[in-house]
Length: 273
Image 1 (cartoon, rainbow, N blue to C red):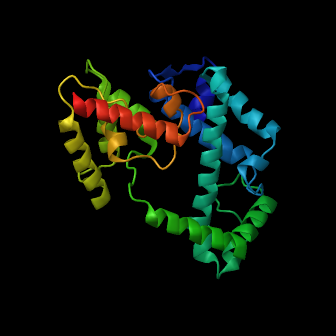
Image 2 (image 1 turned 90 degrees about the vertical axis):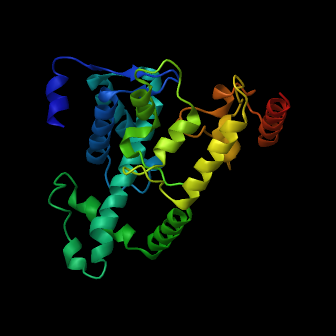
């Protein structure tokens, strides 16, 4: 990204944070693109997975991001997590767009695509061989089936919940509810629901919201009531950085049964009001 390289010779871009400590704003979006470019150009395709990437290469990415953006050092882990996601997506795109369509025409796979002139020839050959292996094809088929089974298709793409919240929140005096963010994140550009499953959840959310008396605040909210999570690792519509223990003020290391108990007690108290 020439624009970033030219600018960092003068100053570092400032990064903004929201109430949950998440990175937001125009500079954050630009930084995410820069992270993707660094990851794709720094990490060889021949490396099997992100955990196999050396600390030296990961540090190289972090250092270049830190030089260009005034991001808090405590977010190094998040920056590298983002780099890992983008690097894996890059490899997946290469496989889908170039390798799979030509798996019966190996002569077309002898060299990497010309638009990616930074890909090393040996790395490309190793990558192609891996993606054409029986082991990988089996993994790929399983991944495709998982996507087909997915019920609630996310539609915000790179904007993300954090930036969508900042966009909608502008000019409002009260915080936007999580369930309203989730609804926005699962509608298409024409404002239609992303799927029939999404439509049913939104109707359920609206129904639950009406049941709460004026002034009543749900501990878990209409969204969690409508879609009880299969795991307790994150909070829907807030991004991976926000976990239930901090957002809902639940004791650390609470088990799923503990969370269910707290949830049921809270719902009962609201219904009794």
